[in-house]
Image 1 (cartoon, one colour):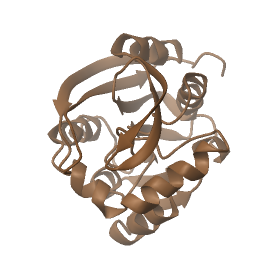
Image 2 (cartoon, rainbow, N blue to C red):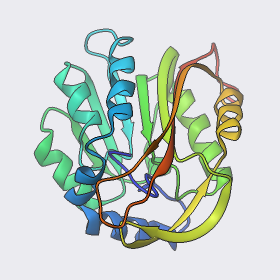
Image 3 (cartoon, rainbow, N blue to C red):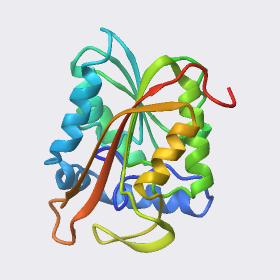
Length: 229
């Protein structure tokens, strides 16, 4: 989540107790989060992949937009119409100041109205990790419905088989849920996406408390009509 967070990503949560905790974590991290993940070449490669498939002036949703960098900044700089959504007021303030060419909204993605077939692309960089698995699946299905037919969705996460595990992220307590790589692939396929490309790697954030963490990037396209649409 250069743009979201826990153990990496996830400023977007749904449980009423986790929601303020997530906002507090990323309010406290602020620009330090951006610095910790600024050297992620895989994230930049992912954005280049997406840019190569977008028509001029495409409408893009950045889920868990964080400080706006690098995702919203890169896409808006290429002339696209970017809307970022993040639950952290501090992150949204930073993003609004740093990326004036994009629009940002402080909200939970599940509370944000999204018209069907309204976005050319959706970015979900490390922004699901503080949601339970049922909610992650619900969010992905909802985002697929918001995509135009044959629109693209890029999703990155920490691919681990964990549910509700308490830990520390950059010195802050977080509760993490994730899927193993195949489980996430099955989730996006079931939501109506075709995986066109993927990258798996280890990345160590630039922070004193950081340890190497696995990252998975899935680059997808909406197939026909999303299930449940």
